[in-house]
Length: 202
Image (tube, rainbow, N blue to C red; front, side, top):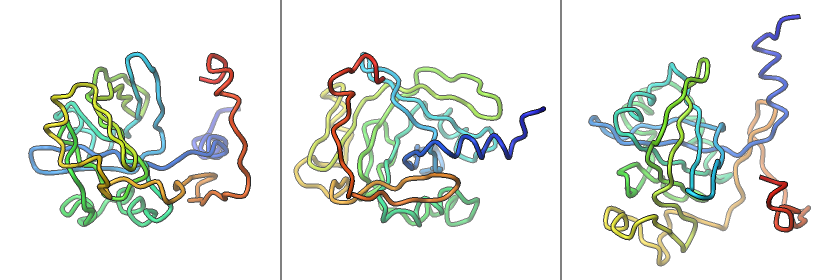
């Protein structure tokens, strides 16, 4: 029996993910799209991976700039996620009316995100109907803390790490499961075994 696209989506939808907006800066301004295929790849050097649909408006922007930022969304940014997932004039011409600062690469960091990762592309691989981008982290941050791979990169930022509200830790993340946005409950919390067995829980 052949694997049909709808069934593939159905099965993969059982894997709960966070929701991000991948942004970059092109010659015609900022561009971005909603992405949930994002993961860390390596600690040394710090590498992350995103997958971008070959039909995406943002794909060529990333190729041209050689950089992108991953904006990790809070539950209050669902509307923004929907905008960056929809082909529209608001998205393409107005950047979904999102306020942002610039990161070390020049990629936009959307205000009030849970965290961000700013990277330079080190490789692109074919992935069927998607392009797989591997990026090396040059800066990253959460509320009150920003780290840079090189100190000179800090000069390019319009974000401060002393109380700037660009990133926040006061809201839970936006999640995606079985084709729908979800909000996580804070009722169940338990330490991860990964802190004890790092090699077994990559």
